[in-house]
Image (cartoon, rainbow over all chains, first blue to last red; front, side, top):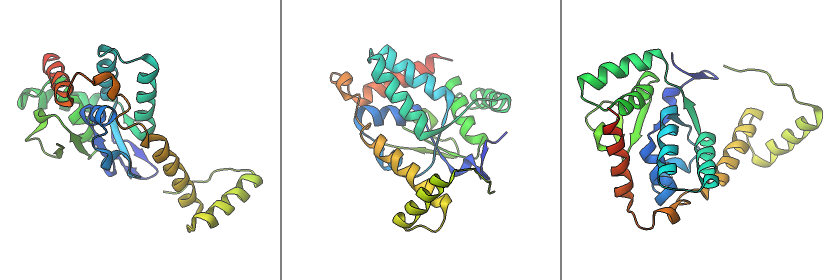
Amino acid sequence: MNYKKRGERVGDFKFLDSSVWIAFIIENKNKEIIETEEPLALCSLSLFEIKRKLINDKVKKEDIERSISFIKNRSMVINVDEKIAEKAAEISVERKVPSLDALIYCTSLQNEGILFTRDNDFRGLPLVNILS
Amino acid sequence: MVTTIQVDEKTLLLLKKLKEELNVSSYDETINKIVLQRTKEKFKSMGGSLKKYYKNKSLKEVLDELQKERRESG
């Protein structure tokens, strides 16, 4: 089901993939998207991915918390539901997309959003904007 | 879709003042502007804030690792 907020579709939001957020917090990339007044959305699995990456890379706990809290505050976090899970399974097999990518992609797709990413594995999928 | 929220008189006065100061046409716009301004200021400083942990690694390497983990997840 589409997440609706005050009559808006999530499709009015830009969905940012984990790679875009990581590029921002490490290198200040993509600030033209993040440091704006535009509403942003994020799949909850991206939070998992970002936090796991920061823990693995030995980032201090307080810096991880600050980063995650900032990402959550700046975005509308969308959970994976049964529709998304089923659609992701189909896309993952049909287009040979890794599971996590398929789930993140379908969260954006099911909410009529455009996924912004820096990961080339999404190339060729509709409604994806690959950033460099 | 519109909805109603309850605020006390002091808050309403404050909102009226802010509405004039910001030169906007509605309370909705006033609240939106304040929230977005706050968000913008708060987050502006976050860009590049974890650079110190990645001095020996390029962004490309970090993102390649992320992509590898994704591919390995199945």
